[in-house]
Image (tube, rainbow, N blue to C red; front, top):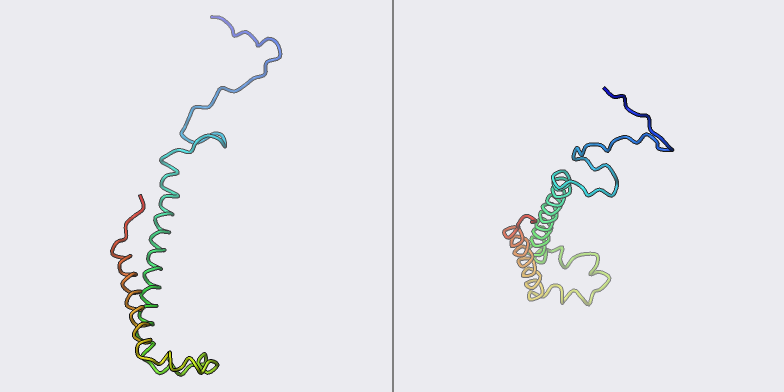
Length: 122
């Protein structure tokens, strides 16, 4: 048997490179596809779902308000019209109320259109 020879010169003991266990060892190593793909991807999907849900909810609520509110007494008897009395005939006009209700129907339709045509991010 032969004995190992001691190092010569100014060499220092450098450990052997570590086996690649799958975890990045340096800041500049590229991330693994399996570990990083599920984290941000899941967050993006849930953020997209929440944003679509909130859009549909806000569209539905605003649409219902625009359909019902123009035909109630609060539409013409409110504090804002007390400061602008010249707007009362315009606001109380049936055509203007119908246009507001039509915008409410359009708003509801847009919200449900988005809900029916929802798709996951790729």
